[in-house]
Amino acid sequence: MGVEALASSILERITNFFLPVEPVDASAPLPATREQKPNLRLHSAPAMRVYVAAPQNFDDVRLCADQLRNNITVIINFERVDAAMQQRVNDFLQGVTYILGGHCQRVSETVLVYAPSNIDVSKETYAYAVPAYVKRTSLSMEEQNMLGLKDMRVPKQ
Image (cartoon, rainbow, N blue to C red; front, side, top):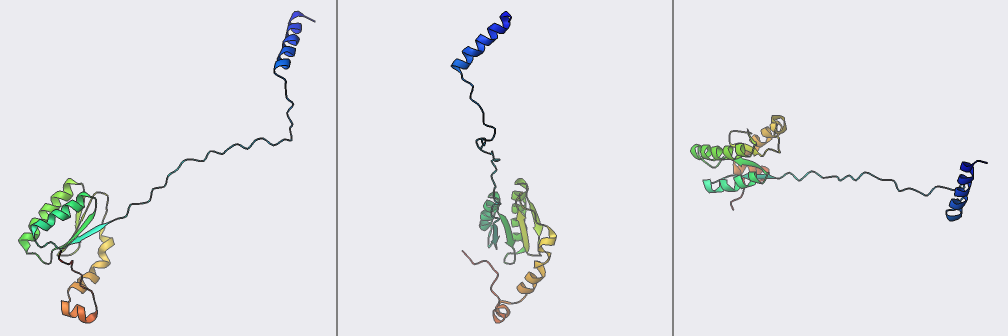
């Protein structure tokens, strides 16, 4: 036996004395390891809100601009204002919409939709609703009441 073999056997004995080797049972089940699941968070879509207004004067338009700033779609009914006031309100809200990166869509002669940048209004979306809306609003208030239709106008605040 060489010096190296003698040194390694002495070293093994000392190691086994201080750190004994435990026999491993092959049939024993391994401890259950905890499976790491990915940490995913689901975010629900925020509720879409729409503000409908029929401005009587230019002071009412500031509320519409505030709604647009809060990423709320604004639908304006211009039936109760004259052409000059309609142009003034439209110019103001077009400017607000442009600054916010949104867009404007005409629904009918007197109804416009001002949408913030996170909303997309396509013509196909409201194409189905326009005939029903025009039919309902073309009736007089008396005719609507006789047919049991509700008043579609925004109440005064």
